[in-house]
Image (cartoon, rainbow, N blue to C red; front, side):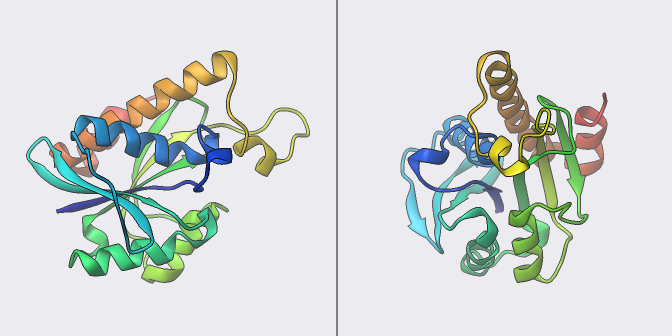
Length: 187
């Protein structure tokens, strides 16, 4: 079993925002895994299914982003899983918009959701699929930028990136980190 967690903020006002890239990817994976029933478990909305030959648990923590670690820890405990069984999907400002990158371990780079998971799990070592959202234009505040819904060309680019991130998760499940990095971390 693999636990795939998409980071985001709960609530209608955050739907479709750059910061909710993880939720968007989980929704896409839910369709691919034919998940029809979602339940609240461990502080997250959870759906169970299969991607390829892999049993997966798809999760969207229902706490705010900066408290994501609690639900992730609870879900790992509930399913008897370890950080080795975890894939976290999240937005990444240090990556160009529309770009997807696969990573094993690392820091939080100022991302409060990742910081919370690191704090609660006591480790930085889990798989990550990062959805590039880029930096805000001009002097726009970073929080304002990631909490806005992309418009026009940005919206198309964002939708394509979330679909590509779902492909990256499936590829990662089937082929492992190294091959996924070779496939998705090219410029």
